Amino acid sequence: MFTSSRKFVADPAASAPLLAVCRDAALGLCVRALGACAAGSVIERFEGDIGPRVSQHSLQVRPGSHIAGTRHIGYLSHACDPNCRLDMARFELVALRAIAAGELLSIDYAATEDRLYVQFACACGAPDCRRWITGRDEPISAAGARYLAAQDGAAAPV
Ligand SMILES: [Zn+2]
Image (cartoon, rainbow, N blue to C red; front, side, top):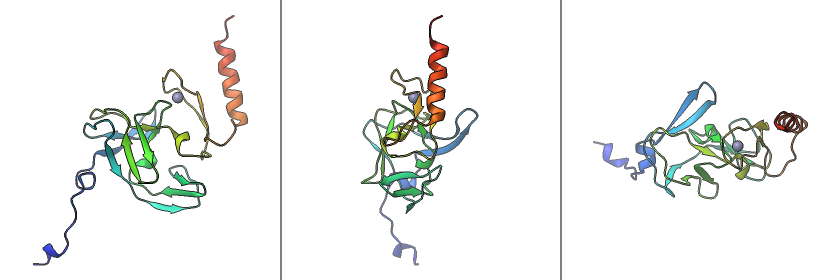
């Protein structure tokens, strides 16, 4: 009797989630597409709790403001040549290229974060992989400098 009083606008992303958080032995928590996504399409409109704190799974909305408690986007993997991007004005996850069902979704962490919760080594395989990932507005940490120097030393011809 009362069911018709609560009418929701159909939102394909909300009614049939396109994403799943998975646990990968190498990557830890990650996000995979459950269906194919066209290049340029909005994969998800996200929501969460916005506040001043940076945490492991938060994402920067604007300087001093971070979104946490999201359903999927807090678990996206980093890639230096990612297949997705976040639109922090519209709160949308957008496909940068065609994505196949089952594919791992990635963003460039430095595209949104001024400072990372923790800097880390990257071996994403992109031709222009930065190898050590920082926020877009912070220097490489001492640990990062040591890591890069050790890598360069190991790679130097003998
Ligand atoms: Zn990389």
